[in-house]
Length: 228
Image (cartoon, rainbow, N blue to C red; front, side):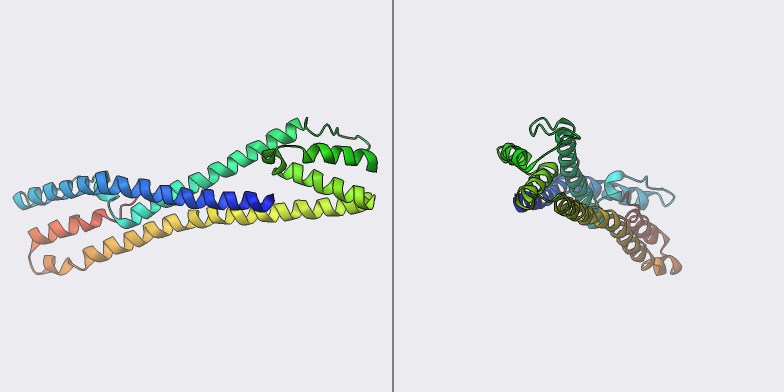
């Protein structure tokens, strides 16, 4: 059951990444890059007509490059992953606060005979509830109790299962941490690339080609101004 949930979650994350790529790239191809191209063309004309003209910074020009596109894709993907984590947490909390299906009360004494009855009730739940962590923990503990009839064994098995679940959740959050690290890193790559492109053309200003140099300097320097 747990492996099935993991496979579904993996498919969800893979599908979320594909959808994020499609949505963001379609937005860039249909809106952002065409608008940026038109704005840059207008700015070039204005610079050629007036050397003192200072182009206004445009959102479309700032985010038109591939680094910014990758940042937006990762951002949407991270939001999708956090959404499924939040949904799973809400379901777990709701079942934990209800617990009416198992009819096990806090402080209730359970013997091996009653444990079998409770186990049968839990195993009769639908798949969505059987896949929850609380249900899996109760089923595992009751099975161990009906087999060994030893409370200490049940406590040890339950504690091990809880620790394993905590480690699994911690490892899953590492993807979110990696994305949070990757977004500013990709943005910094765009910054370095834009500054390098501008500095590589600085010799034109030294040679006295101020008009052409101004046009080329202004446009590449809009690249590093990334919101990512």
